[in-house]
Image (cartoon, rainbow over all chains, first blue to last red; front, side, top):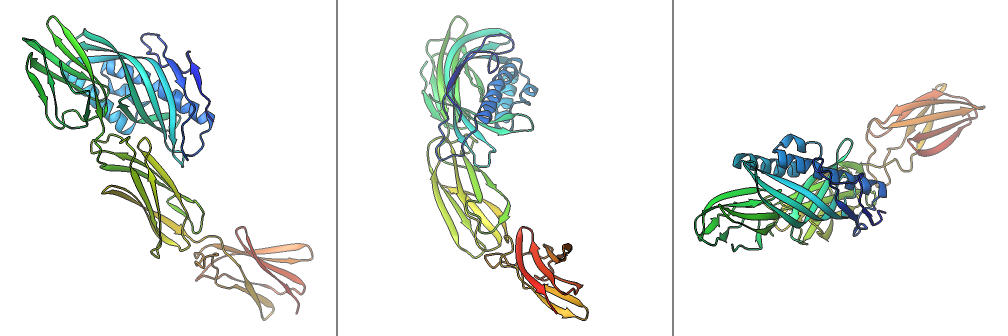
Length: 165
Length: 263
């Protein structure tokens, strides 16, 4: 079973490659109700891959590059983020997300082992850049619900959805 | 500016802007980005379907000399429109306890995961019409169940439904291992003709033709075997008749009866 712990380091760092800042990651004990038991190694791998997906998300939305999503996102999560990037490109804007902290919990592990669902109370900074000029920089809090599915060598984000905290 | 704190995905909403002059209104999130050029002091209307991806959005009103920010949450529509239903396995033996699992994620019309709990029904219909039912509340948009495969071989329908939305998968149920495997021996000139009774599983389903049945003759420490596929529900083989031979039959891990040949 995945035990709760706090991470501030490089292994599970969700820091943007461009800023070197590190996000604080707190992992709560899984909250699985009548669900398949989750092995610690599986849970850690899914969370590690999810946190790495923030790097891809950050870079893709900052550079307006859809291709940067391909390693970490699949299905509707990829489609939605790709559409956001296309909207940004059309408007001449970009966004810089910098995650500051994650508070993660596994809430569902499907019986056949083909999906893991997480919640993430995330604190992040976001900058809106309009035609190269930073229009605003804000600190935000949001709750994300994430569904990951296994690919060849990693878990990939299939649902990435914000929700009110 | 004045705006709702929360809206349902795809619903219309408006933002009341203060002051006068021109400005740009941005609504920015990982799920969607919108921009409108606005006349300050006016209400900006967003039609139904404008903002439909659930999430947390930063709202920025940017004028020449000022900037005002707020936030807006878009929550999934309450009405389910799509189910992502994974049933496993697609084929399994009959009579297996908790052998079938189904996992479902519930989405709205914009493919947002509906996080509010709702009752989700699972129904497994066997080829003979018997039905197993379970109702499970969704949790974080997900629900799952386990079902027993039924006693009769054939195609079972496994359905998940919520509200007026349903999704069906077909599960192939095949006979289990042979049960009560029995052969008979009969002299045929100088040979022995071995033939099984009709091979069935423990629920009475005919084991499919092609399943291998192994006949074994053991005599004075030596052993000879013949593998024969089931044909028309039975297997048969002819072997040399040796007095005192022990004859046995098996299929897979199932062992049938033994006959000592004394003539």
